[in-house]
Image 1 (spheres, rainbow, N blue to C red):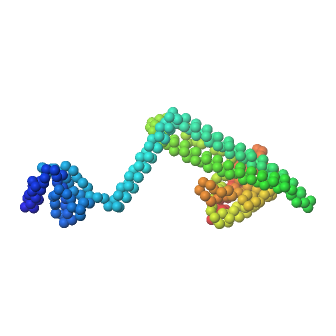
Image 2 (tube, helix red, strand yellow):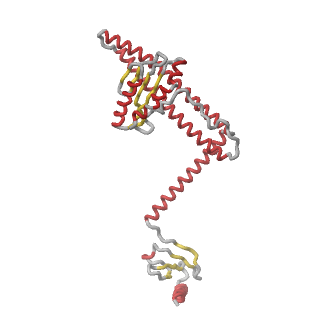
Image 3 (cartoon, helix red, strand yellow):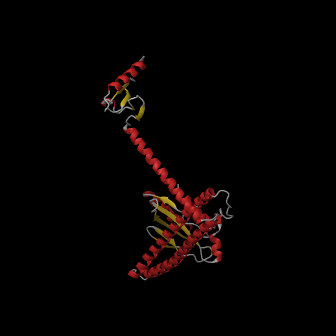
Length: 322
């Protein structure tokens, strides 16, 4: 009976509608009652409705107006999809470059080992610079001590020599840390590339030395570095200086605000220690680290690789971290 009434109502609207009128609109009110008309009333404009032609056949559907929350949710979803499309495009471009750069795993591993060897050579060179700078600092300190024993004040040249040598040592250590950070990032990047290359080239021959990275004969400073921020750095710095004084076998040449250097090693069992605190520009705060130096001849180098010196180096972080 209800269907008949609705259908009859529709027939009346269709018959009485002028030829110039638009399509018939069909909508349902808040009580679930279906209505037909040539226009949707203002109070129902935001509801879903259907347009019918003059034969009563649905030709167009209008969804209800979205709420503000739904609109914001759709915007967020579209932004996420756009980001996903961007990431996919970037990955495809990286894959294309990866496959164009390397014919096989051996090529990739050779590139990795070449880059690491280059960074190791730069680090080793800087350690050599530091060794020379420490010798120079020791000479300047001896000259300054002799001047003071004569009851005289240091002249401007002596002060400048000490200050410039200190800054050069600090700068060299900062460059070493930066190169060691770069070395770690490089290894992580090549590890990712190797894994991805294997995924893209399923079934390809594996490089025999893919999992072997040549180890430098100079221990990394980053391995001893402790990160800190604010007042915590001052506390840790005091502990680091005390640690250096306790374990070094050579006298202190320089004890400045941000660096402590003991005299260069001369004998086979001499242990020269430098501790310093540098600003960590990558993540903020500071890094406090330790460098151990032995004399530069075969027996002393062997001693430096032994358990005694290794323990000094490896225990530094434990001494600083609670």
